[in-house]
Length: 157
Image 1 (cartoon, rainbow, N blue to C red):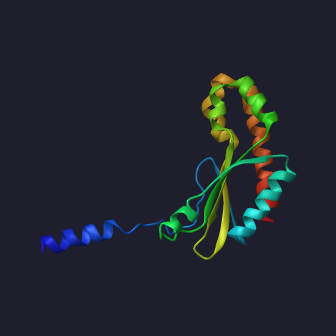
Image 2: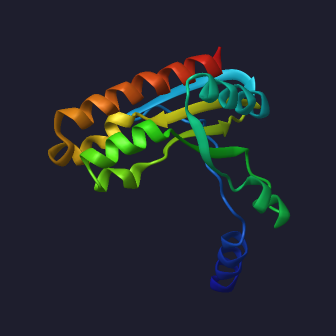
Image 3: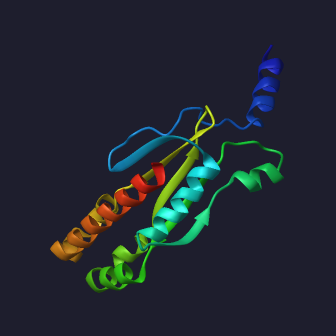
């Protein structure tokens, strides 16, 4: 019996498990479920970022690499958005806070084939640097909160 249990454990340990729940709200995040498919939401997000004067400076996602390894996972991608105006301003206020740039938006494919856009609020991400950056950093983060919300609303309409 112990051999069978050990065999099943070894066999099942090699099978990847993936969270089957859709992205849920959490502290410091905004979550926008949509009726759009992943690719359509990605296209909308790209256009919305540009329209709101933010540049997508990074993109990363494990889906294609996993597929090349024979593993099927839901689509997901992290996009880093920023612009040089904010980079220069934040760097002047807190060298350490620049570790958070670019700030990210996250696209996830839901179990039903729709997609969700979510992100950590820039003010939430910037909070650990408040003592160093003071009220000016809080102001920059609040302006980024508004821009990220505008991008999310534009992308999810």
